[in-house]
Image 1 (cartoon, rainbow, N blue to C red):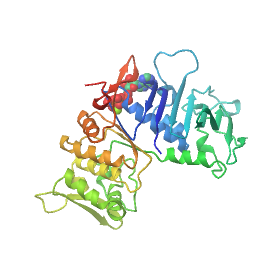
Image 2: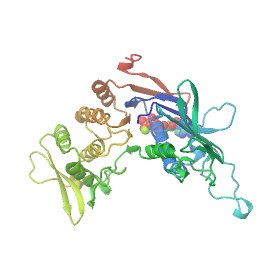
Image 3: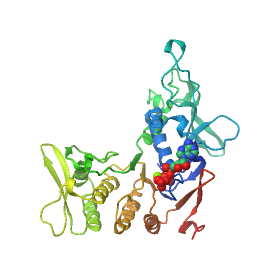
Length: 373
Ligand SMILES: Nc1ncnc2c1ncn2[C@@H]1O[C@H](COP(=O)(O)OP(=O)(O)OP(=O)(O)O)[C@@H](O)[C@H]1O
Ligand SMILES: [Mg+2]
């Protein structure tokens, strides 16, 4: 199910940004313009669906750090994340809690990084009529529409710092909400794969069926072996050959531990993971991500071009465009070449972001949008 629009407000440099999305979306722009902020806003939305909103925010400094730090109008300070599909609309708004330090018996707390969820809703747009509310939360009170269309007050005590979506206990009573939550929670994000000598990517790892590469890529060998066994083995072979002509993939296996290896032209023995170049390892990770036998509803990639040679950007763009037939894709990139290869292969919009007085705005669309050169 494809997202039609993202609405982000009050999150870092995204003071207020409404973004229409297509099946494939590319964002580019100078350092610090807010590309990663956009990517992170989606990471936080998915975390909210999983019940990890507070943790995800705390990991980047907590509410005081993430709230838009620029000029503010009247009204409370809040961060709003909204996602609209054809049939649903979800929004969550968080602010700074009014917390007291000191002993717990006197109402004090130690959790100063926690956000306070102020408002949250799910609505189903109805043609020509007001949207039907499926979930409505104001601070700590929550209404849901159950399976029979009845509005019920939710009896359980909520955690003020977590989404109501993640705290609904009886999915059988609220099937649509449960479905929407699972959909968001399964969005997939990849940013940077560590390839330094101590990286888990360079060491043998326990191998089990791995249809989804982990975020850090440590299970790369198992993910590639899974594609070979139950995925599109032929595509993997073709893409490898397009990227590294004449190469051959080997998955070393010893006592249950797997490690990727590559035979490269001119050398007879396969290179082990610790011998492969950073770019080669990262490209193998991207192959595992984009050829996953279980494509997600949404796949977001932040700077996939990192240490990939210019010659590989065209095959990478093709791979991304092909994957967008199975998943909605959002790519954040510095690389003009990658963006224009994707645009040429798909006709998808490339959005150029820029910062105006600290605020991230869409500067224009390249080529197909007609507004830029
Ligand atoms: N709370 C905040 N309020 C307003 N702006 C913020 C806030 N926190 C961070 N920023 C701005 O966001 C910028 C970082 O944005 P981001 O990481 O998205 O950039 P980027 O486009 O990904 O850049 P790069 O190309 O270097 O990766 C910071 O330089 C800062 O200007
Ligand atoms: Mg960035």
